[in-house]
Every structure is written in C-alpha cells, then in structure tokens.
Length: 259
Image (cartoon, rainbow, N blue to C red; front, side):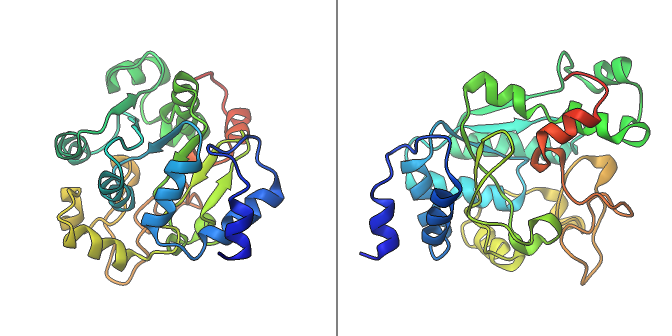
C-alpha cells in the first residue's frame, strides 16, 4: 500500500466536513492516478450526501452509465431546468430515466413552471438585458442542495474543456463548502465520445447536427471543424462557465433579485 493510500485509510467514511486544505491535497494526490470508475467508486464510499448534478451532457452521461455498473443504487440526479433547454434535451432526460431508472429531481426557477411564467415575472430575453440575474435565477442549485441536504456532487467537467476548467482537480471544495467530484477530469472529448459509442449510452440528438456542448437554446450554437468543444457556448462573449460552477456568493451579490 502506498503512503498516500495509508493516509487515506485514516479518513472516515463518509468524510467529515469541513475538509481542510491539506486533507483535500492528500485526497487529490490519491485520486489523480485513478480511472474515472475508480474515482466514482471512491466517491460512493467517502463522499457524504452525494448527488449528481447534470444537464445530460456527454461527460455527465458517461458518469451516469459508469455508476449504473458500479452500484445498484447510484446517487440521485439533480437536473436544473432553466426552462430554455432544447426539446432534444428534454427528450434525452426521459430516455435516461427509462434506461437507468435513477431518480431525477428537477428544479426550475422559483415559482415558475413555464417560460411564460418566467417571462411574465422577469421579462423577455433576460439573458441579454441582465445576464447576472438570469444566471442566478435559472440555475437554482442552492434550493436543490438545501432541499436534500446535499453535501457532495458529481460533475461532468473536464480539464480539456479549457478556460476556467483547465486546472481542474479530481475533487474540489467550492465557496459554500460543497464537495465537487470530477471523475472524468483527465479525459478529452475523444475518450468521452468513444465511451458513449462503445457502451451505447443515450446521447443528445443535437450532437449529430454539429453541436458538441449543449446548454440553453439561446446561448448554444454549432461548432465548426477544429474549434474547441465549448466554442459554441456563449459565442462572442467572455463568459465561459455556467452559473452552476461560478462562485455562488459572487453571483448572488451581482444579482438584483432573490431566487
């Protein structure tokens, strides 16, 4: 057993929070050399109140499929329904439910069931008129986490996606103390695509139409040959990250309304 493995054996199952910086470093040293499946297996054993947040992108789907083969009771899914997803994304959600039978908890903007509800309250094209408010309102992660006392989440982020994700570690602690496990942090798009095809994992039909990373319909475009896989997200803007993975307190401070 390596010295790092021996040190990890001293941690309780599940981990006791808050996690110190030194403990986080120890854990990441251990996780860094593991396969995604091994990282997920570790997460199931060690992470308290574990859920998976997903918009049903390719990497998240890989994690869902891997988890289905690791355990008969995988972490429940949290889907933040902005109300502005493509119809193909909603179809995929239903397909995943049927295929894997894992609970999917859907959270929408507060007191809004439809786009009509949202726009009557906040106006049309809020993503253009007040992007900070839009990001805060349409990704109600904190309500989801508080509702289920979520302490840890599995994400679909990868370092190869670049920008803010370029220095991604296997395990992170965000500004609220939430643990974020990134099991496929070291994989590139080709590996993800290979796994999807090899295991016949359900995927968004838009990926066959020139899209590579799919978010809201108003801020997602097709990607040209040779472009970065996330080049079609918020094209022409400095923005590279969705509100879910930005600093919550910073987003809340910038927003002028309460979610």
